[in-house]
Length: 100
Image 1: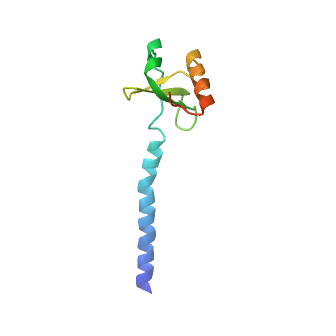
Image 2 (image 1 turned 135 degrees about the horizontal axis):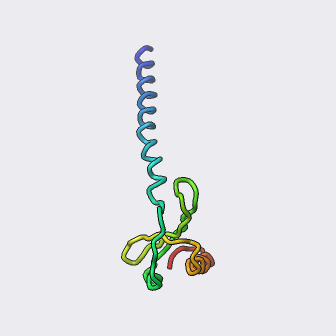
């Protein structure tokens, strides 16, 4: 009986230790993909956009932004209040996708 009790204590302790180790990695993941500032872009960038996603001003992200994924696999953050960005979002929301 004492052996089972010791095994049960060990299992509970191990589970708590495992959860404690996992918590920091979960918390760090929320801040990983946030834009911190806007990039200034030239008009020609529009021809290089593959897709985009909208970053809301909530949780760990401090500013609203549109993240553009370019053909060269780079991602840049732009101001969602720009007129051409608003138009791009409206056009693509009609198709229900962020693919360009």
